[in-house]
Length: 117
Image 1 (cartoon, helix red, strand yellow):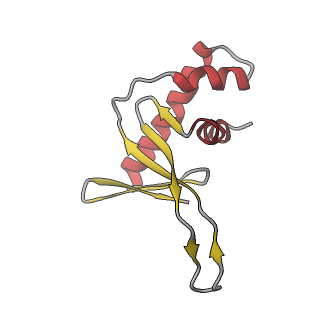
Image 2 (tube, rainbow, N blue to C red):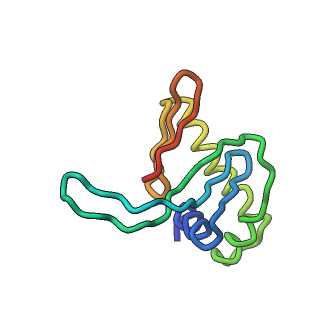
Image 3 (cartoon, rainbow, N blue to C red):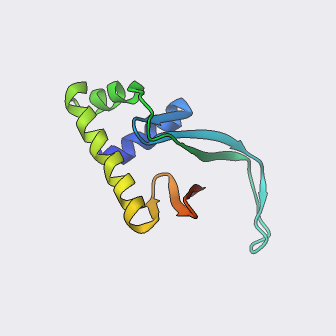
């Protein structure tokens, strides 16, 4: 299973996902929604929220990833660092980052914004 799929699973199971040197994703309750185009009422659900923290030092997700990838935490940590570095570099280069498992990050006037999928 891909690293990003495992990260999303962790978020769904734990309601919060802290990615070292990147930030924290949270699940928050979202109210029912009226789709004006179709007229359908969508039920309440969960919405992903993101808080950037490039200084975050939390390794709670590492053990989960190691267990699910049949690997040692010492081998998973650099792989997770590669993912967060790739995300940061993409944001720096293009001012936006599409993460199909989570949503989109984009910078506007040096402010980082997140749009849940």
